[in-house]
Length: 136
Image (spheres, one colour):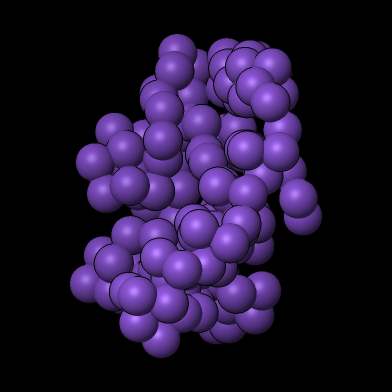
């Protein structure tokens, strides 16, 4: 995808895997996130075991993945799983407002910066990541 992706709302099981695929996540203050599929013996198969640790760190990801416990919005914000917490019932509106604000910026620069931030994970050295940022 060449544009930022924003998720808004609750995210459990496969929904969590979709949420961590997004660039940013907006949660209502009553939202719950978690690897609830753990409770029924269903594995994460849509990138959750890769994206979640990269997003919030291995220790916090393992806590969520292995225990299947619910994570409330404020904890999700503290661990970096949520980018914004808004009043309940307004997450979609807040995500759409964020998207509109991003869309109002010049797209060429935004897209190249996003691509650089995403692709730096594959660069073997800092020097190569920095050179890639300059090329983009």
